[in-house]
Length: 281
Image: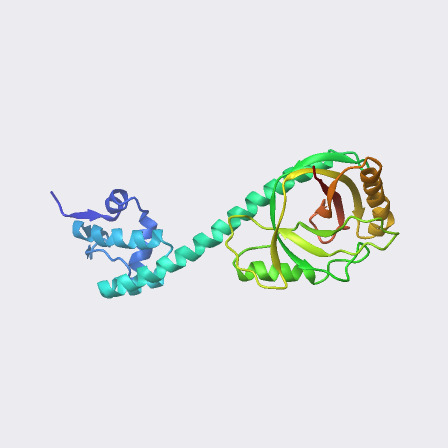
């Protein structure tokens, strides 16, 4: 049995393309054992297949070809050092992918909730069950419904990004349930939800907290960046008056959640907002 194989046979036996073998030859990574001087045909010795397996393995862990060339020309200790470094790289990539998975999972849940809210009549008080949420929040002593979140959102985003996480496009506000006069509402905190699977050590002024599960009294309405101020107080008073007139016991905290209904910066900002207050026994 011949111990030499043509380039086509070598490609077939090693599940690799002829073009790749020719490219490896050109780069000096994997050269044939013998080239026929008369016709230029390449022949590989069976013992070379072991080294081809090493190259294929290194490619499978995303090793660039220039690094492969360096590794195979050096010692086993060099190979071990490289693999240890590559392991760190892969662990970092896995962490990024896990973060992306968690963000995707959370965003899907938010969209499901958004579609549920979309099905509610605008301006009509309703009740719905809300699951426990872990949140990241920061105090907003001068913020109200008549101005934007400014740099407060960036505070939350910076904390999450430092921990290798990402902020999503849903954030909300927290304020006390009171009989405000028009334009007197002052937000106490701005928040964004955070997956329970993230391990976070947070320092002031940003804090970790929870929104408790339970039945919430809610009202939903639409607004845009151009007319947010027009009806906000009306919808808040509709919710507040309903709670008072029906003598409903609550925890006295209002959560406002704004959900974008468009995602393009060249279109008008439009949002679906829900005000929600937790019932208590």
